Length: 413
Image 1: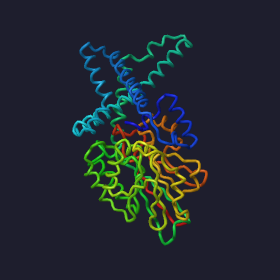
Image 2 (image 1 turned 90 degrees about the vertical axis):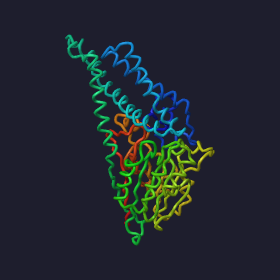
Image 3 (image 1 turned 60 degrees about the vertical axis):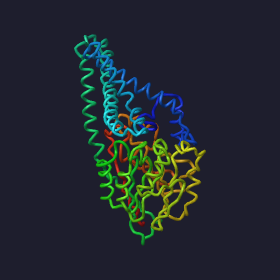
């Protein structure tokens, strides 16, 4: 759960400082430091508050007896703790329990978050009625919904949105991007790069789900396949089957990957082993020249501090290792642009935001990440593309934020 954009918008002063720094185009913390204790406290306070709100609403609507309330509290506590149970089950090898709790716990997470969002709309309606009533000098009681209605409408709306979002998460879109550049030699012709990002291979994304993602990649017929971080999400899972599925994709110029924050959460050594077994060449502060025309420059996510590495080179330092004459693509997980790096690359490919994954949380993630999703022309003339992500994190649901693979055609000018 750590680092997911759904919960990166806590209300503490430390996070507000992060938002301020991100708006200036800087990493919130150059060393990638992350206060895990503060995050967990914020997460359980906020997520626990949603569960308490749900309990109060259902109690007001149906007035359950004492035994029913005890059972409801137990189920809500189980839902609250589900993400922790999933991670512990993964870590200690209880894969069946991890998958069961992931499916139920994360679908429940989507339901209760959307229930709370829908309830806020009804609460605003109630407030409006209370404010307008005295002005009109009318009895507004007939306009106020009952406690049961205040529960049932958000509950049904949440279930409907989760049902739709479950299928939207599997409706992968191909986002085309055509770039003409004098740096692409005519003899090279078109070079097609397919970007995947935030696949989160692990307890939920595997098997047929992953096969559908890779089918769409295969249909795009890439010359180069790049993963811009969070390729893997599992802790202790047997991902050999997933690695074998990736190995079946063999672009003529190869496959390249950079780290995301979840590679470090899962364990960087295990994540890199999976990445290499899947046939990707990790670019960790390295440059790869492909087709004699394109320099791929990869930088580590700031989460590198979790591997014990003290510090990371700046984007500009890594970009300086490229030739400078070829079309240069910066692969960077988070859509942050260092002040000194524009002008040193032609295209930056990023992900991380998921575009919020589930509306209305995209309204909050866009405040944290000014480069939220899509294409952005930078001051230097370079282009930044931010993927909505190919998989899902947490709830296997997307609402008004469909997954994507990006198909980039580099063409001679």
